[in-house]
Length: 201
Image (cartoon, rainbow, N blue to C red; front, side, top):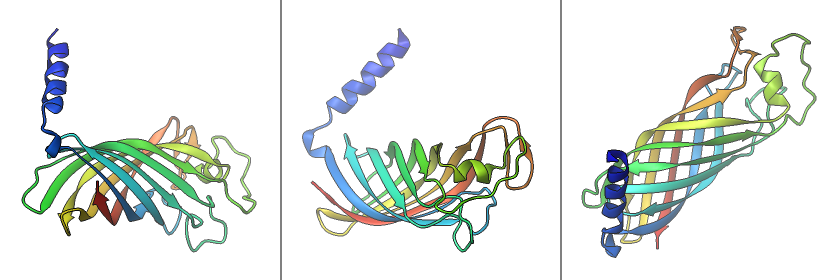
């Protein structure tokens, strides 16, 4: 009963916010991500877009996608992925302090890993190396924790920067990049940064 009352109270709080406090925004951004799996040069560069609905000045609901078009890892003769597509959906929380809004964020989603374009030679062992699993194409669950800063450039235009830890869940059993046997699914953290600009409607 208390749980239902709490949910109901939160819903009433958001519905009671004045219409002026609500806003819809969209931005485009440049993304830099690291995987943390030891497969070589790990910086992944992409472009993306985000739609944010703010039911109040404190809370934002994000839908964020990004496309990483280059082979990964970069600067290697046989990348394990030709391209990647990412979707992260979550919430930001932070006060507006004049033209600046610092915020904390949490999100969950996926990283769709495209199969390698070049033939990848894999040794026939069990469990298989994680690079072989990735080279065949797969979708990894992704989770993000971090924060950022939103700065008004005009009454409608803004700049936004996010810094977060992205946790990818890799399938097991697998032999990881350090040649350690992982008997079950496992997580690896990596830094993710986005910098962009947008407009409010």
